[in-house]
Length: 206
Image 1 (cartoon, rainbow, N blue to C red):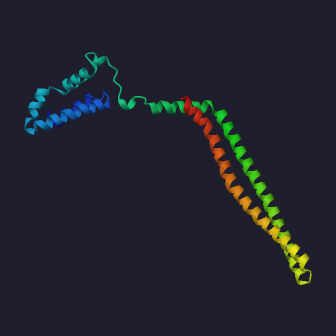
Image 2: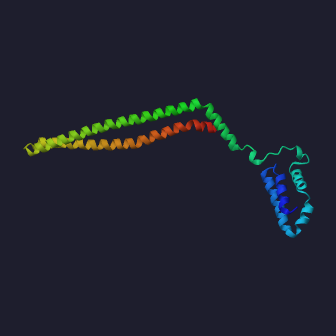
Image 3: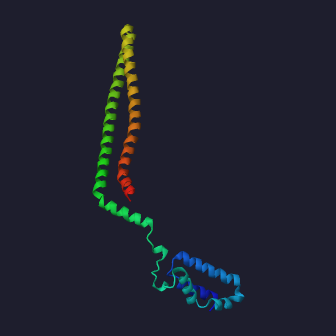
């Protein structure tokens, strides 16, 4: 038996112990052979004994004399905290499905209602703004006509009213743009917070 065959058999015999322990043992014996050199390979194998004897010695050191009755579990097969947590999450999602699906439906309804109300308000303000522009243009036009026809006092009053309506329309446009720009993100953030609530409660209970 040579070094390569010895190490392969030893690794196979240690396949039922935790991976970290197996890796540490294999590294130890690989280094042991490398330190001794190829010329001493036979003497090292004779000194260590068979791979079965070495594997038995390692298991005795790890688990005691009754290692043969020990139920070896590989590390990769042990349930981790993450897998247990994921299992709990799946179970809770199934059990609380009627609750959180209702919350999502309600949140979606609130979002749609908010957007519709905001859109309706914007349409109403735009309509009023358009009417104000139209009235302002009409008043300004009549005022200019009165000034040109020899009635400057009346013309100035009408022109001033026209400018006032035009200014009001510009102000209304600024207000609606500002309101939509502020309220729409707020509605979306509120919707996201409502959607997150059932998941945050579930995470806290795990």
